[in-house]
View (cartoon, one colour):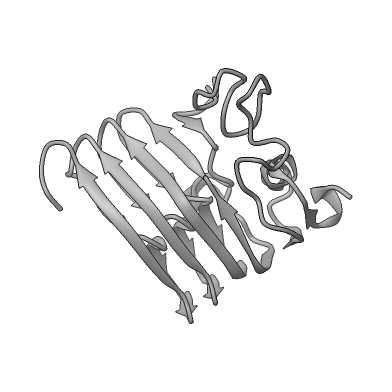
Amino acid sequence: VTALDGAIQDWNDLDDVRNDLDEDYVLVNDLDEDTPGYGGDGEDGVVLDADGNLQDNDDSEYSGFEPIGERLDEGQGFTGTFDGQGHTIEGLAMDGTGSFDNYGLFAAAEGAHIENVGIVKADISSDGSANNGGGLIGEMEDTTVEESFVTASFTYGDSTGSNTAGLVGEASGQSTISGSYAVVDFISTDATF
């Protein structure tokens, strides 16, 4: 079973969601650092390289996991459904360089429905400012989030960014969030949030 038929079993399936942003997906088990496709311990993965360092994404401003989708204003947000079925994604890690925009599991979502998923122990950082970011979604429009949560640490080198929150960075249009929460630490190396 692969993400192409909607079932997400490992990190590679999760990473493949970016190839079909309007599909319906179901997380069929928890994902963590021991799940195939994460990386480290001699294996290249979507989060870590074989040496255990954050994966270098040559065509992206991110290292580590590259957020799914890109920008709403470019029509490249996630538009499908994602049902976590009560499962968790643990160890999501990403680091941005310079100005870090639209980050989280999903960079952007438009008209999407995301439910029943937990993002656990996410580690999100940038040496610059951060805009439109959350552990689950960076920016969303006309999107529904239900029964989901995030626990994370956000570390930034510059506190001048905007629209950064634990669950969703920016919500617009007819977006709704219900039965969801975030418990996060925000750290800035040049100022205090």
